[in-house]
Length: 92
Image (cartoon, rainbow, N blue to C red; front, top):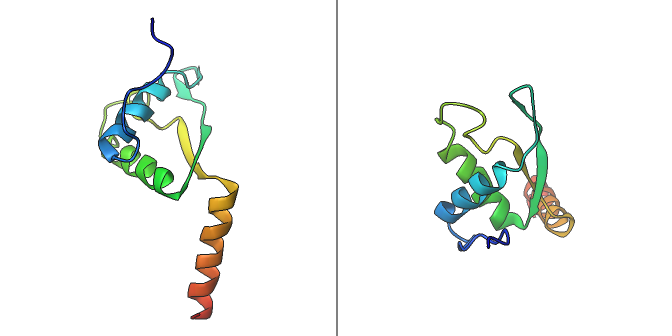
């Protein structure tokens, strides 16, 4: 019985592709259009999710590409990224 657990190491791009393709099957579709859902993760996970989407960008249809999943950094990681941006802008 499949309990929905994907046996893949999410710290690699190949596994991120596998996970996102598996999750994309559950994204709602309305008239062959994908409804976009947020997928939260830490900074590294978000980066790998974006890489996974780019790797699958050449697939034939939007239903084959993991376009229904929008990577979003979790609040703590988002704040950390904004602090890094502010430091870079201020030259600190």
